[in-house]
Length: 150
Image 1: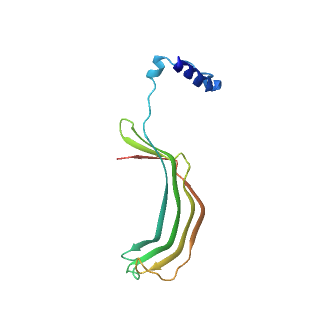
Image 2 (image 1 turned 120 degrees about the horizontal axis):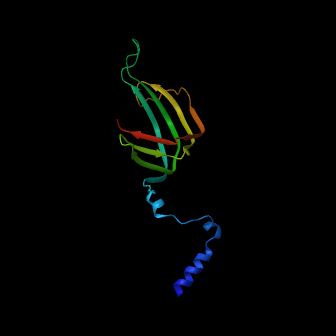
Image 3 (image 1 turned 180 degrees about the vertical axis):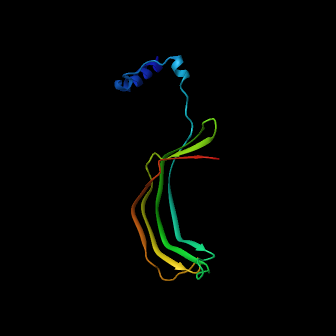
């Protein structure tokens, strides 16, 4: 009897509007329903890099044949924010696919600064900077990415 009273009290707490428009589902209708599985993840990633360097070992043209480097120094990056990202796999009887869906929300948010852009002869050159690069209020949205092998 105690369980019945508790159940009745819990049912009275449910809003009546939640039950409006509900109808029974037949066994035939239920046979058409399939469940979905997949992976949902949320995280914030902070990337730091004091220096990013790109080198070309053979130079270019007939005159500049020695290696050259482009060095990005004092780099600060925005946060990568992944919230509610879903990862699903499926096939079309021919190929298999994986879909990564960010829900079209901004996955990169914030400011990016490269304090110095240096052109040098080594990857650790510290010569004069050609300038600074700043991107403020950066927002990058991806939406859905579908990948398959071939």
